[in-house]
Length: 234
Image (cartoon, rainbow, N blue to C red; front, side):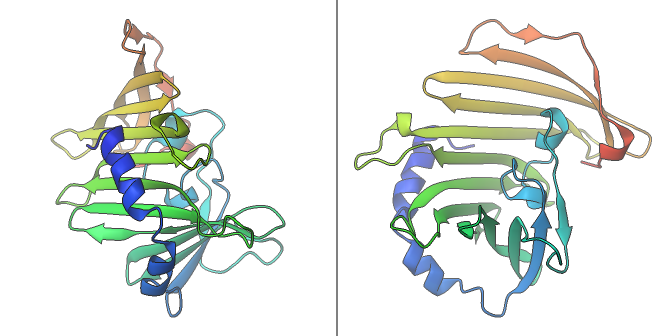
């Protein structure tokens, strides 16, 4: 999995590529799906993380719609070429479109820079990017997201926040452990999750260990149970 320095290098590589990507990956002719809800998740219902909404409170994944909502603007519009997601738009407030994300496939890795696309001076300005690595069987191995909290002429590491997740599977292919890391302004929080599954192979409960800034590992004895209606196979 990449470190923050490698993500910053990728950011610099794609920072001024909006016009080129817009020309290369047009949404004309691509099949559309729509997302409602999931605003707190990267990419909404199609968030790469299989666990974020299961272990973080008050986060809902949202849902994918085949047709746009009749009585409201969608929160996301997804553009597909075949089965591959190529573009993800996240809509903002009454001003309209907020960000556009381009998904670039490189063997088992997907790099996805995203840009502000409001009709304002910062149109085309890069907001962040994500990197997902997949196993040969298609299961996700890791997800990293770099977000620029503030724009500056000479950006430094302090201008960026990093969220990353790594996943481990057992012999039956079930997600057994995951490590979630958040790094922001010198604050580093690492959380390691251990999962248990129900008879249908869905994640049913988990325990978590937390480490702040490399200090003592805090293991909570509590077993967190996931409501049956929110469980999923991972």
